[in-house]
Image (cartoon, rainbow, N blue to C red; front, side, top):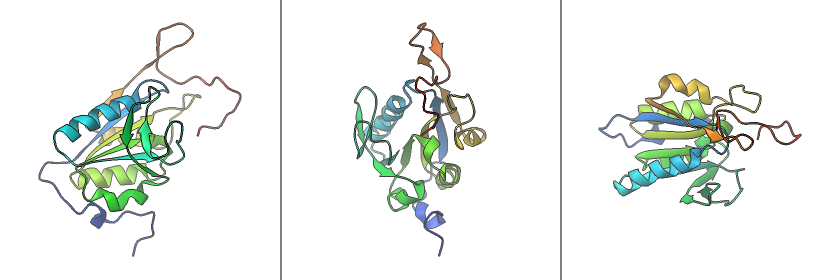
Length: 175
């Protein structure tokens, strides 16, 4: 039996005839990544596909149990610390949305396995830290993604596009 943090192929038991694929929505903080993820998930939901949204358990800004945007848009979500914790829910899903992907240590393995099993996987994540370094394993997914959307925020100082996050507090942690 596999350790609890390793996904088995049976986790993705329901194979679809439509090939799975991976979409990435990346950019700095306040660029609308979660809003875009919710928009895409709502489209699939309206198309009568089974949707599963997974959120990072420690992201409790506006809701413990739902994906929430800065504008207070809400979408049902499964809060987990590792994506493998959601494997019991994956088999029934056609589309899997992952918010705050940069925080999941098993992101690459989970996404590739799910897409290979015929799932549509959409990941919203920061692509870089405030130091402009790659954040987590998000950038490792770029070569495997069928679509990569890079969003910009708006600089609060000058009003121009902001392609990266600027640290505005003394704390240097990235979570």
